[in-house]
Image 1 (cartoon, rainbow, N blue to C red):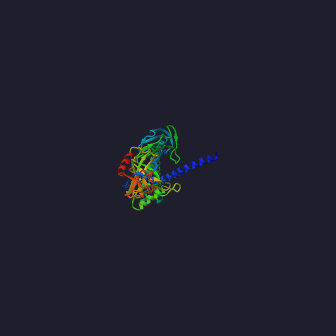
Image 2: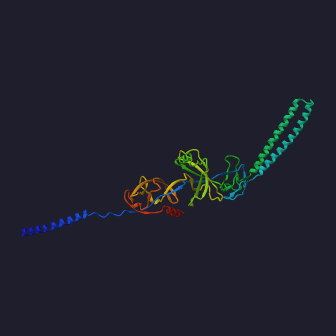
Image 3: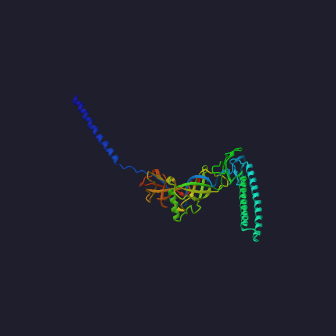
Length: 397
């Protein structure tokens, strides 16, 4: 029985072994059969647009009044009335406050009386001097008496001048009881009300209100040291004049505006770099006839930079990036994609300006870059970047 079982197992092995060998042979044959190669990925390519562009550099800052005045009294007294509307526009010379003028009117009357008295004394001294001069010429009086009368006349003249000066000062004090707007602009709230006693005429005089001018209006901003060096080198190269010497154009937009619609010009650049921040202070001025621009308001501006110069433009979708560089894929004459490192700049008409890394005839992959590998062949579709400019510009608007 044991021999029969062993014989059966030996027979089964003889049958299975050839079948296993045949299976291995079939697998080997299948592995030797070459696989069909995959089709190259399909991508869209286009040549960059060559265009003359001008750089407008963006900065942020705040608007500030050209003139700001703190209104203070020049004489002390009780406030009789406040005659302006808080927050309103005022004209130069418009009446703002009235101070009780009665003490100053009395002082003016006294000063006028003193001036009149001095005038009478001078008249009397002049007549005395005239009489003694005739007597002196006939040797009827001594020279000493003549000199005395002459000096009395001069003293009377000086007394009259002092009295008239005191009268003018008293007249000014009366005028100062009516406080008027020194500049046109928008006035703030009042810090005093009727019936209050205020001090005036000193550096510590009470602040009554403030006025800021609105038209024109300044815009202050800061640029980095690199920005300043860029403009300095453009000036040295004769490409763009310094804003110290030329009224370079600027354009401004407010927080709720999409475009830079307010036009002005540069009118000041500071004389040194701020050591604490490493920035340079600049100032632009804008007309503001409708008073839309308000001091203290945050805004953005564009300042004329480099240009015009010829640049190449491509869609942002064509640009890839890694940890070190930004790049595009350029397809060569054999339809093989090559990786090209570029230096992108700002947007122009919805397309990206490329300063370095491309030439006008390069075929750039603008769609499907995720399917492209450097050194791998691609299947091409062509596109018109000029049409992309029109489309991008329409979307931007």
